[in-house]
Structures are given as structure tokens and as C-alpha cells.
Amino acid sequence: MSTDVEVAVGLIAEPDAPMDLARYLAEELEPELRRRHPGLGWRFVVAEEAGAPADVIGAARDRLLDENWDLAIRLTNLPLSEARRPVVAQASAAHSVGVVSVPALGAVNVRRRGLPVVADLVDRVAGMVDEAPDEDDRRRGSRRLRELAEEPGEFRVSRLVTGNITLLAGMIRANRPWRLAIRLTRALTAALAAGAFALVTPDMWLLADAYGGVRLTAIAVVSMLAFTLTLIVGGKLWERARRPGQRRQVALFNITTTVTVVSGVLALYAVLFVLAVLLAFALVVPGLFGASLGHPARFSDYLELAFLTSSLATVGGALGAGLESDDAVHEAAYTYHRAG
Image (cartoon, rainbow, N blue to C red; front, side, top):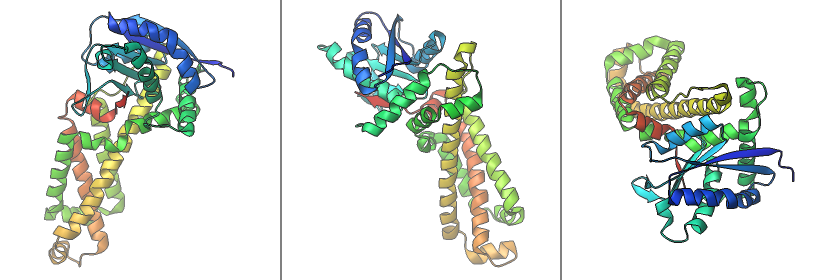
């Protein structure tokens, strides 16, 4: 089968055991990846890097951009953990980076154990998040890798999007954007507090009744935009290209980030709206509500109150997100998938 597209993989290794494993992988990994992804060629570059940075994935991402690789695998002596539990390897599809903790492979048979772990890691970086991918999953994963490695023509964002639909969809799905707000405890707490205050305040009842659908929709859009910008700008999620050759990788990353955050904020708003509707009917007494409005409380009045409440709760969430650390925002926006 033709291998007209070649995937460039950087193997970044610390000295000693990680470097020994990297050299072995550069020679032995290709047959396994060809078996999993027929039709793709592979090129491995071994790069030694002393010391272990605090942000291993971020540092590997910087090296990937500088070297113009398609994927980067960092082999480190650092321990890795997920939900406070040790793991062997982690992958971020958005960053096109995977990390392997070499000590976690054990003291013996490191090469034999490391080969399938790194092969699985490549699958995770390609957005194949299922533990047991079937043939269709592998086909989609191969297409994402092909899109990632294909030589771009003239750079246009519109062409980038239309030509990399499968890749972008896989990267966004791998980030699990619907879980974004759950991981931001301060933002979620502030959103719930602001929503509760708005729901039981008579002045909010009057404003919801007076605003009308168009103004309430505009407030909702502004609130979600505020939350999105707080996360992307305040959390330093936006990546900038330092050289023309980095523009495609950076654009893919920024599109994935933006869609992930927007999807996460939309999911949060939907949950807040449903909660606001339920609590409005449960807590706001119709007689008192109608007396405040000057007319009998209708079903639409409750929906308008829930609409305004969820918008104000989202603004509160944006304020709470501003108090989150950059690390917390990064962990919320990008899901690191376990491998091995």
C-alpha cells in the first residue's frame, strides 16, 4: 500500500534509561504502527533533553513546534498520575503529545513493555480514546494521522478546517468539552451562588419580565462570551506561532481549544438553565411572583426568569474562572488520556 504521507514523530528522552528506550523505539516501533495504520509512513527523530520540566506536555509541545514534528513522545523519569493514581503514560490529542514514565514500566523488560505502551500512546494522540478500538475507530485514527502529517498548501484557515474535519473532530472529542466546567470548582461555585441569588431576588423577576426574548438572548450570548474569553485569554490557552512553519499546527491547536471551550461553556449554560427552571418552579411561589410582576405568573415568565438566572450565573462563573490558576484551566480544557 502506498505510503505517500509520512508521520514525523519526535522521541524526546532524558539521559540513561529513557534515552536507551527511545533508541530502541526508533528502530522497532515502525512495524507495529504500520500494522495498526496501513498506508502511513513513519519517521522517528530521537532528541535528548536533560532535566524534567514541571510542565512536561507543554515543554514537549514547544519542542514539537520548533522541530516541525507531527507528534512528540516524551520519555521521562518523572512519575505520572491521574486522579492521584499513578499511571504509565498520558496523551493529549490537542497538543499532539504523549508522555511515558519510564520507571513505571518496571525494572525489567522495559523495552518489551514500552513498545506497546508507546504504540497505544500514538493512538491516543490520534484521538482514539476508546480502550478497545474497533476497525472503524482505527480507520478514523489513521485518517486523523494522515491529515496531521499531510503537507499543507497555501495556508488558509477555511481550507485548514475543511481539509481536517476528521482530525479536528477527534481532537475535540478527546478533550471531552462537556466536562470542562466540572473541573473548575471555583467557577462552578461562583456560578451556582450567582444563580441562587438571582433566582430569589424580586428585582431580577421584574427585569426578566421587562427584558423580552431578544434582550435576554443578547445577555445570554454576552455571558457565554465573557466566560469563554476568561478561560482562553486569562488561562493562557491561546497559542502563537513563532515561525511560519508552525502556523498550521498552531491553528489546529487554537481551533480545537476554541471549540472545546465554547462547547464546554454551552454545556454549562444548558445545565444551569435546566436547574434554574426546576428551582424556579420549586422555590418561586406563583402568587408572590405574580404580585411582583403585576399580572398572573405564566409558564413563559418562569422560563424568562430561568433564562436571566442562567445568564447571571454564567457571568458569576466567568468571575470565578478568573480566580482559577492557569494550571487548573489547562487541566480542565485538555483531557489527558491514559495509555498502557
